[in-house]
Image (tube, rainbow, N blue to C red; front, side, top):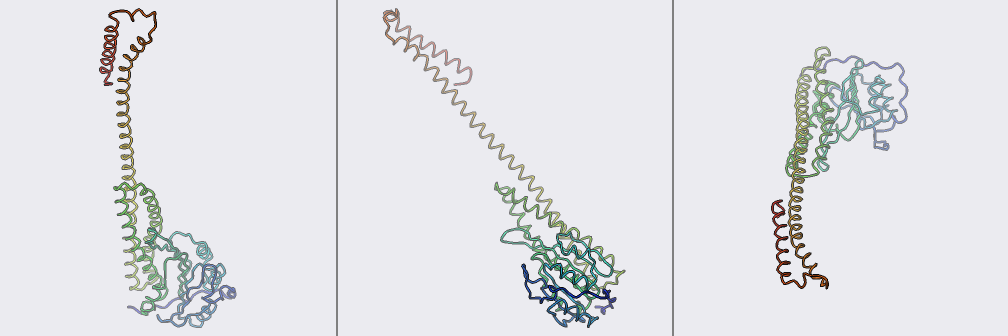
Length: 373
């Protein structure tokens, strides 16, 4: 590995104002959401020198050791803390404003000799079967690196331990830490991709199993994939931008290889996420088709049941009409009025029977021709 290249002196404001009381509070001081300053550490030649308890102490020790590097980790810092850091390290006000507001898209901007980087980390929650996104802002200067974390992800303690166990890499300065954080964020996408792949497989099974709740799950996962795309797609361009500046900014060869590997992983992850979103779109279309087919089958079954019911009603109505004819004749001749000549007619009974038979037969023939019987 090549020797550590000299860094240009950091530009400081002539008379930085004293750090506010919130910045002077120790790392263990708690706010509503817990301590803001997670850890502040000074390194020299890749090895830890000290871990100051306050930002003011960090500033003082860094001035005493101009060949050192400060790594300051913050979680949801206050406005006073960020303004204190801006005054000490000459951070651009626009970058500080972005770091305060959060909800930024992944990006990389250069303000003089300071890089401002926004990353979107992700983690897969097995219990809820959903993707949780966090936001990380980084200020990378000649002799300092400040991380501002919004959300639970990513946990940078593992990155810090990894870098401290590799002093030669840490000795390369803030750029090495930046690339290590990039690698950690991108590596954190792998479990998310695996979890989403499992969800997609389960959704496919549910779709063809006729689960009525699968549409909502497809929609929610599609929204998460949109957020995942917003986190991964810009990273591809950001990393290519960093690689384009290798020669201009004299990036160490080891870090160049390191960054190319991270860029490969980002490209692969971005392609997988694009594939997931396309697959979910197709699954949603298939699900809509299956739901439509199921609804059509149910409507057809209802129509067939209605048709069969109508046929039965026709048969019942036909037989009711046929049986009503002899009932009507019998009722008329059963009234026993004195002035009914047919009552004393010798052929009255045969005539009534024949009349009943003729009417019933006629009705039967009519209903049979109409396919009611």
